[in-house]
Image (tube, rainbow, N blue to C red):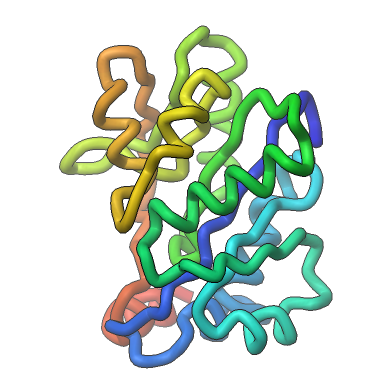
Length: 198
C-alpha cells in the first residue's frame, strides 16, 4: 500500500435493474469489474480491495486472474453504505495505519486513470478531508477520504453511501470536474449505450 493509501471497489449489489450480474458483463476483453480492477491497478496503490456480495462465487471464479483482494460482505443486501463499512473495516484490519481510501464503483467503466490521478494529486497537495468527483447534482465517487472521516464512514448504514459523507463535508471538500461522462451501468439500456461507445 503506497503511503498507506488503498482503493476499495464496491461490487456487492445484485443488479436487479440489469437482470443479471453486471459485474460479469463483457467489456473491453474483460468484464465491467475486471476493467475497474485494471484501472485501479494503474495507480500503484497495491492490490485494490473488492467488496463482493450478490453472486460472489461466480464473480470470484471469473476474476481469479485479476490483481485484487476480494472480500465477501454477508450483509450486502443492507445496501451500499453497509458494503463500504465492510470494505473499510477489512482495509483497516489489513493496514491499521491506513491514511486514506479511494472509493470506486464497479459499474463506472468510463472512469479513466487520469481522472483518478487528478483526484489523488489534489489530495496530496491540499489539506482537506475529501476530494470527490463533481456531478450535475452535487459530488460523489470516485472520491478519496482522509482517515479523519473514517469514523463517519464506519457509521454508514443501509443504502446511504459515501455521497452522504461528501455532502456533509462540502464546506471542506474539493470537487474535481469530470472531463467526460462516467455513465453508471444500471440497466440494459445503459449497457447498450456503453457498448455503442466502443
